[in-house]
Length: 406
Image (cartoon, rainbow, N blue to C red; front, side):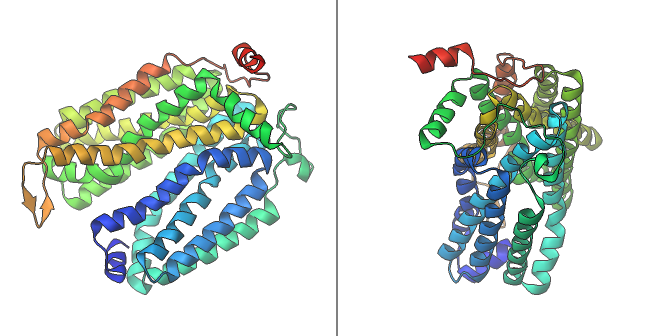
């Protein structure tokens, strides 16, 4: 709905970019609060509230008379849907056996990515047919229906439905004091794996979403002479391969009883793949397609981060650490997309086509350097993570105990 928004609100590309970015700003800002809230409120209440606020935000967006009003709606949407992933992880922790946690997380990632890819064409057709405002109004109604469904169906723990619960006996979700919440955040940050797993997946996801969502299409069109439709198709193929790789690496990690080894292998393959895509440009085209598919698939290894981080902290802090890790994931594209654009503008030779800037191959290779640099850093940092052997930490580490005592 890019053109429609620019026409209705009388804004340019820069203003539209800021409007779009409101979603990511609130999404990132809500990750730590979301982790805290899911540990204190529980996922049932948090997901219900999130869906309700998403409906309100969509309603405000649909009826906005200015870009400011639309920005407020966009801000509410981004902040509200930010609870979905962390809430799902909390539910998975209690409804599924620990040996299936990484696989379940991978399936959730698959559903999310496929939903995003598949929604593009139907959404565009609906906007073209009835206009963007009715589409957003229908989206608002759908969000309220999801809210009602969560309230009536979802339960925090299987025991509430008479089933066996997989929640750790040590986990305490609700009625925590403010001082306990603050100390919980501090304690999570005392575990080295938390810091490492905050940085690592951001590089992997940042490469995927920066390439597929923004700079990959012009790169492929300009330097591989692929049509815009073909370039968009390759970007979608990268996302689909990523979606398939998530459940695969999650299942392999669960089966092996190891987090570190499959993560390192997947990250190594993805690092080599991005090096080939960005700096070697395999020829002919079918080899480029193969490399893109393999790289996307290997990038699915990042799903291990959530199981890895969850097992690295006490069970009552799994929501908090999940929110923190998800913040690191989203920080990847949030930082890399503008960083690549900034470098490209600095290397621009002055060429244009239909008033749009054209960047040469040298500009793209230098511009893609931050992506590849973060990817290499992620691979190196993985060697410093501490293997959990798929077992949940029950008590705080000795270092954390000593720090608390001091």
